[in-house]
Image (tube, rainbow, N blue to C red; front, side, top):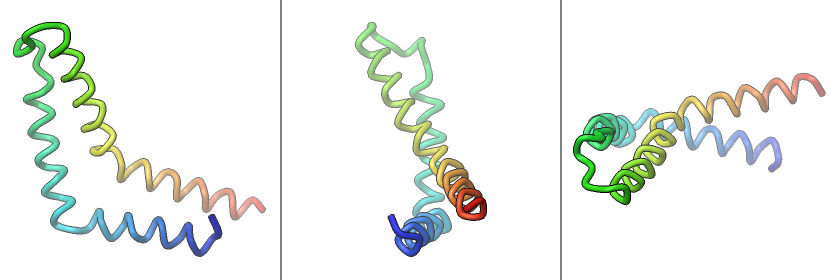
Length: 82
């Protein structure tokens, strides 16, 4: 990606993170993660593995903002080193 494309990429994420919809989605994921993260509610090993997959997806979404910020900082550091 060019620098312009990369800046546009990061800016689009930042706009999304500031939206009410994103904040609502994150609140929903936090609430759902607490419910899904219950071993007691598992019926069998397939259900446990399904819940594990759900938690992985939720964790990725909940951590997306910090992952994007880290990637942006790394790109800026790489640019300043060149």
